[in-house]
Image (cartoon, rainbow over all chains, first blue to last red):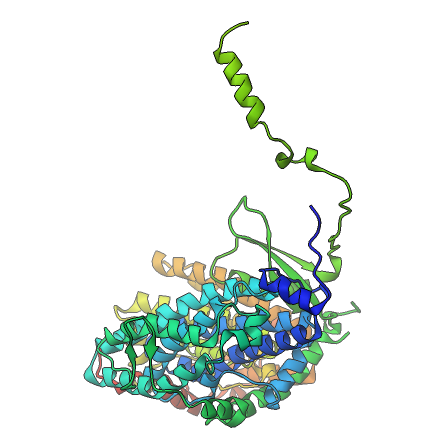
Length: 302
Length: 103
Length: 211
């Protein structure tokens, strides 16, 4: 059997990936594809790493030993995902140190949800359940990524995320069947997290105009992902007696969910580094990155 | 490596192959960046085994891997493979003859 | 209640709590993942020992007043720099090994069995600590950290086991006044702060609330 030759011409390459073709680290990639790929994957790695910070505080405050263990394991997975993802970026040519430097200096981005504060244990449940649910929908759309090394790590990532969602839902369930005050904590957290959740999958650029979809880096457009999230999770939220804080939210007869248009300007503003917690979290990360530079130097001394 | 462990190693990519259950093939699972085999082991154990999902790991410095990616494919090699053989027609004929009895 | 076991459980709970403070900010991502496993193991050990001592492990872990905790000052210290954190890991594992080896000989088979399980898991902690110790042993920061924490490490063990520890790590036992306030029986101010944060969510609901 002839080895499949990855086309060098950009148009032929586009046709190749759109027909389901995959490429490896050593293949010659069109410059635009490589650049977009690195930016996309790097943002994913940044998000996993920044996602640790809001949840980390709650490990320390977990109200039972079981929850403490589960939350630590969840956050550990996220650090592990960051490691997997940055390795992929490094093999594409951008070293990890550069990625981390760009992250803490604000030059590169991470997902909107990780720019917001966590206020209560209610947030812990809502984030682990619904933010991870939104994320897994995006991540499943990456399982067939045209860039094979990224597609391969997505398998492990999706497998591990499935535990997170179960854990989150369990935390929420314990509270909605607990005291009225606990139920209120969850509802209040949901009220705060709903707008960022609706923005999470990005503005509804048609798939045919989305370079990530055209290059088959992801197999689904933004709006499709959001619809999947609503279809899967609004019923689950409502069956617990919780209210989704959007009076316009409704499912049409044709199965499409209508909702209050998210504030896309706000999304753009937040991901360009102006979220309520952006600066504080980046400064925290920067502090430890700098403080522990001597350790990396000592361990890698030639 | 120089004298004394404090001299450190050179940071390398170590490829990780994991075996899910005894008897299964070792499959490539990912990589860790580490200065030596001991750090690679300590780290790979947790990244690829903390849920008991692997019974064994092979850790190999990336440089030790000799990759092979191209073959000549000039002449028809179907005779070496299963898809080079279509026995349906002749098998049918042979069965019919056998069913018709001795000649 | 068995003071020795409660001390072990409280040590593991608090050092696990302290070690989990490194989640997301360890010097390398690979180490972050590995270190988190160690922290989880410690909490797991604490839980297993609490379960030997009481029906409700969570109540025992979280609902006691501060002065009923039996942890040693070593584990209470907030050490958000890597040299001190690794120095503590290394010293603590050496001290704990002596304690666990004794518990493995306990007349109660439940205790001896649990100690053996803990020991098998801590073999990996010791490997990890030794790996870092070898790598950092010539770094002045690390040597200073070991010197800072050594008196506290001795405070993990009763006086009759301290010679053994000193021999294992090749350090001298200082005079008694150096150990004042660093031995089991005392608590640091840091424990109160830790306990407050550790129990803040739990205390926000009535006792017995489900989480």
